[in-house]
Each structure stands twice: as C-alpha cells, then as structure tokens.
Image (cartoon, rainbow, N blue to C red; front, side, top):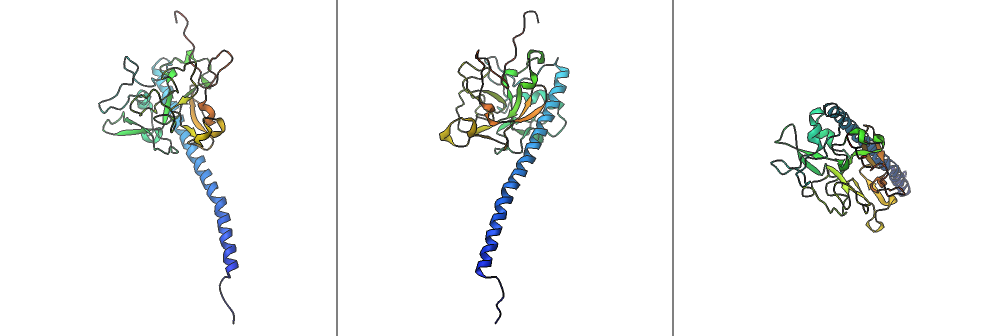
Length: 262
C-alpha cells in the first residue's frame, strides 16, 4: 500500500531549510531598513542645512542660536514651559513639514525633546537633533575649518541613556543642545564626552570605549557640519580628543577668538 505525505525526516529537513533562510533574510531586512532610515535622516539634515544657509543670508553669515537664553544662561521657555530652541530661528526658512524634518526615523524614542511648533503654538514637535552649543550665534569667519566642525547631530534628551547629565537644561528636555559631561557651554580641561549625543553603551560593564558604543544608525551618528555638508560618523565621535597642547581637536573644536577691532 502506497503512503502519501512527507516523512518525518523530510519535514525536519524543510524546517531546517526555512530556519536557515530566515537567518539570512532577517538580518538583511534589518540592514535594508537601517540604510533607508539613515538616508532619510541625512535628508532631514540636508533640509536643515538649507534653512540655516538661508538664515545666514539674512543674519550676516552668523549661525543660529542654540537656544534663547536668560541672563543666567538657562534656556528661555514659552508659556507651556518648553524651551525656545534653534528650531525657532530657522523654521520660517524650512520648506518641508517640520515634524517630518526634525524627527529621525531611526530614533527609538520618536524624538525625545518636545518643543512647541513655531508655525502653530497649539501643537508640539518632537526633535531628534541637537545643536553644538559652543557654535551658538557664531560668525562663520570665526571658524577656521567649518567643514570639520559638527554643528547638529542625532541627539537624546537627558544625555546618553543611563549616563551622567550634571547640567540639565529644562527638566531633561534638553536634546536640542550638545554639551559636555561636566559643563554646559564650553568644555573644561577635564571634559571627556559630548553629552546628549545619541550614543550609548552596548554593555554597561565595559564603559565608554570606542568598540562598545552604538547609536541610532548601524554605522554611526548622522551629523551636519558647519559648512553645510552631512555625513555619518563613528559612535566614538562622543569622545573628546585633544592635541599635545590640550586644545580640542575636530569635530568639537571651538571658534577662534576675534581680534580687537573686529
């Protein structure tokens, strides 16, 4: 008598084959999703760069404010208690939908900084990008190498997940500014890391080592440089580097002091 159907061995072989195919396809799918999200994020930064360039045409080649500050340096807030950030400076120059442009599609928090929509104060926007605070309102002429200076990058309110944030700006709602692990406006001699940058540790016990860092994107942190070009940098971007004289090296260099009479 003939028997129809698969034997147990055949079923097992098919099951193994399916698992093997999935083991190949799932990482490939995730890689393709990351490539798409990275490209969309870089597109967002290019749109922001265009808006900043238009802003500079109206404001004597000066970069926007990182945020509007009170006399004591703390951020000004609107009637809802939300910070007035660099977005307010450039929103009128941005052509695309603000929320689409300001939120990184790979941001697992969906934009951890909440600000008021400059075009409609009854609405809010979620922000995934932070402005390097020392370049706030800096003239481009004061930057010796604008192409080496990071201006805006993927960010997280409250600093890296689980990291020290000694100078919170507005109740942890501070992803709009990139500052330092021990200072708000400029690094000190002891500053080691850039905080609020979207970088965190893969394993807590290994510490902040270059090979133990990850970010929103598989290949690193998406950044906009002061000259307007965008790129993806390694997560080790978070770690400050200094030359033999103790001066910060790119991409976190500081503007040059103006000479008398300028």
